[in-house]
Length: 125
Length: 125
DNA sequence: CGGTATCCGACCTGATACTG
DNA sequence: CAGTATCAGGTCGGATACCG
Image (cartoon, rainbow over the protein chains, first blue to last red):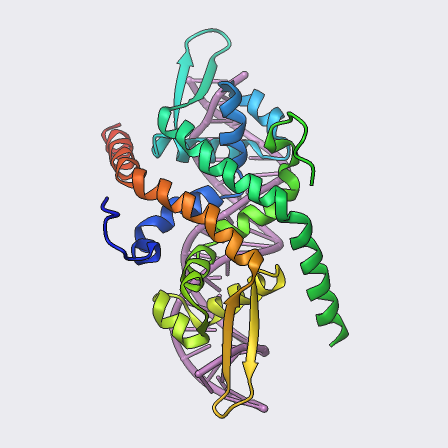
């Protein structure tokens, strides 16, 4: 991937969109952040995140595994244990995600205020 | 917003999710990046982005306006001109977004490779 | 325990037509 | 030019049931 041209990023937006929309996915960010602490098992994550359905957890984990963001390890015990751990690639994503989280933390109140103001103006009209 | 505790970010994930999913939206990132260069008019953006429908452009702009990320200015000329410009808040978002874009640029080929490998393994099974 | 399969409603998205 | 209204298809996401 060449970034040597002065072209703005959005020229390549077509190829980025699939990655960006994965990250923007409802659960991906929370899963990645949860796994940065330490590897987790399936139901352990389900409890840690809270509010996620079994299906969406399975789907999102599968998508992340497909992207090579995490590694799925099956321990052939009884009952079976499956452990999910971030790969190096997944760990490297945690960094820009935290940047985004920091930004969100810094501005979320202002955004929520803006929304209230905007909605109130709409309601008045 | 306090970030003084050692608590991981995902504790507050509920409040972040609306912001994060906005950013992860299919068009938001491209619109913000396009506007970082300079303010644009409606159809100008439509052409610059390419592939976006008139409706989705209108909706996404409205959502960004609601969040206070951009300002909509109507010039009462004939024909009417409407200019969209990022606010300070919107400009400040461009930074973490570029971080994410840089990360995506650096790793997208590896991710696409991972996807191919994963899909090939699935097809073989 | 760790999933997959199925169903179903809600929402997202594009196309098209129409308005000021 | 800059939208809004309406319709139709597809996808998202949860609940439930079932399997190894």
